[in-house]
Image (cartoon, rainbow, N blue to C red; front, side, top):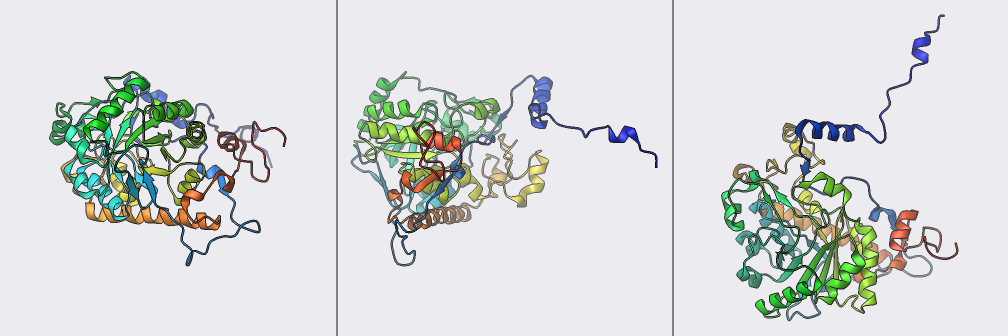
Length: 445
């Protein structure tokens, strides 16, 4: 038999790890259009996350709790430092701030219905408070943002808590964008903007340049709300030790720490993927800051950015958080990314699970849109039930883990219940590498 030397000496085509298919498409797109890419959602790169931690269940040295007979508490109180009326929640899982504009009115109503059904809070967002979300949210947190879009002192008084947003995990140091396709007549009126024109939110508050000004602003808001409402301060994860310290010294009742896996409305792709810290790396220094100030558990810590399951909730609390907030996961629970809509996503050049290319308001699920016909597709009552189911499952999952660790309340979980699966997670959390009592930076091995 004659051997074909041409075939045996030829290697298979091989893609570069540096210039992979997506990177090549980015370069080609930039060269063709001359503009940077904009999308919604959070980072898509693989980052250290809660999956890199494991719980140590009870065995000989401690005993587990029986799920059918022994209670495991889940309630949390937020804003106990100065506010006359702190918030009492039945679960530590809350709904993060997402704007009316980025989301439809139906979606905002559904989030309020679902959160209220399980006794937790939801949050407004850039653009103000809608009657739908106030009317259907038993506990509503009102965001006070750098843009001041939709800001209304009367709405401050209608809220149950105020969240001053300094930064967001998906874009710390940057402002958001809302494309003109989503600036409907109603959105434009609420934000005092022209209809149909792209809107860019400010990256910093116009009337303050640092912690001293933040302290003054907190005092102003306390006076406006008669010292009744807890004041949250939200920061994007970048320098958590110093940012949390300054927020506490400025007078915050609650600090919200948002990691780079946190979602966002439209903004630059390069920003989403290359600025900030993963939440796993940010919790430990934030808790350390609170402990150094003697304020851990006195100023409550809410963390967000990629919270998906009850296991994530339990791990965040074990690391020292008091509560968590969910955004992207809540939208998925509402019906976003559904495979039932695959054919319609394909028309947009997207696929379920990719959340690409509907930041301009063509979301077929009726959630991230201002198109009245698309928005009608979301039934806020049904959506509220789905949110309530999801929140209940997350809470029960966290309880299951806490009981397995022998804890009678989710807040009794502690770092000692956790180990890290790899060196990166061990270094970031200062948890021991699984099977050892050592983490990077600790003497000995």
